[in-house]
Image (cartoon, rainbow, N blue to C red; front, side, top):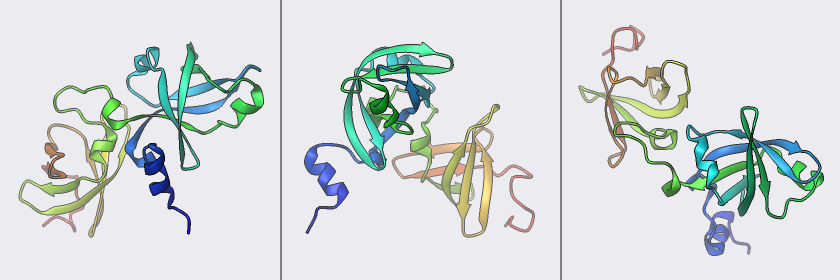
Length: 189
């Protein structure tokens, strides 16, 4: 009887992909010597300047990689990864995520949160009515939008101080003020 992939990872010392934060994604190989073009998925691109070790997540598998070179390229980066020395090996990484552990993320200012800290929170109104759970965070130019799914359907909440009154990660809850127009008239209680 084989081990589950989660317990196999635990015994190997590698984290579960759900416990990692994606900071970049391999788009394609670059050149013939194994460099890969990476699209940044972080608000802190400077983190790559000193990042030596990261995780490569591909098809549910996690492995530790050593980044031996980096340079800016267009709106992303070109990375050199130890053991990836030719075009074929680099092409095999297409679509893979470059990730770090959650405890290695850049600390944010008070009141700011990472997407992984918001998704899954229960959402209640100031009056205590449960609206549902944050299922997704949509990135928008003015502000993020929280997609809240509940028994009554889906609500889109702007991530502004006027709407989001409190985020309590310890209790797994977000308290919101429903401003006029945020909820369909037939859903308001």
